[in-house]
Length: 444
Image (cartoon, rainbow, N blue to C red; front, top):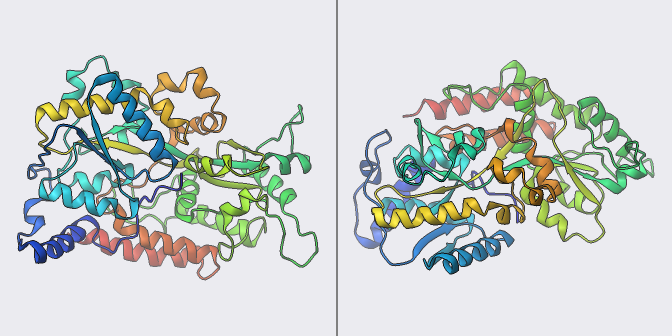
């Protein structure tokens, strides 16, 4: 399993632009010339029908790694237990959303599909999802309140729940237990003791950063940034900041709490010298090879550690860097296309419910279930890293639920990269990014 390609590379314009371009390209072939946006009003109005045909449940996702094999086993068990066939199509995430967009626009959508939490608003704006409430009402044995409220909220748009969260994949602190023990960072029982506060984190990172030949280039780093955007969101959230203002109308990166969080990230490299600049180093590979002692990454990366020979790793909640708890997270959401015939919708719901009921099987591959009844089980407690990361679910932070979230992320990525590479100050980078983000937000 690898990082979810949330906000996969895309030019500004995101869904609407993709729809226009895809429509134009396809129209050249098929002789179709109807502007898609005329069919998909960006409002709370009704969208065109999306009717699937065929006997099996058509289920689309982008699980191309080991998670795909896990999902395939789960759907086969569903078929064996219910007699309902499932035709699962795995599409690489790099092209998944383009294909999904076309299918939703042209009425050939699958019966059930996965949408990342940070893309929900972008699609929901065009009213392409079927509301979940009628399905929940028809299945009173499913306790929707069993879902962690913060994650359930991410499945909601304009006050309507439009998806069923399958999981959550929060970041957490991965640490090399062997390096911790060798550095004497242990508890009373001699076990590696992960840091819980900024002071503990800095103390550990200093002891774990080693320049053995004195050339000024440590052979071992105490910490390294991995996915800069999501690492940044984790730091921002702990200072009460975010990419956008709470009403999603303006950029918030240049506000004082955001600058304080960004300065701390920069200081880890240039002031405290416990982390390398994010260039010329594969931070995650460095962690796997024991050259980086701590990294903040998503739970989905655990499978790459499980196959690393000789690596002694463990997981813990991200230390408290700022005044508030906070950590970035994502979620795979199970969605139905709007206007799916009732019979097919009911069958698809049975699969959705089955996957949710059996999400411990899914979690074993590197996810965290989002149902409280499953989080309390002994089986989940034995998934030690997932269990540690799950402690953060009450304060997990998703990317801004704006229909334009995907359009602003290129400016977010550029800004944090410029800061951590020492190209721009936090204030200058935030000002540049904010100006560009606001231009995007001001467009109709």
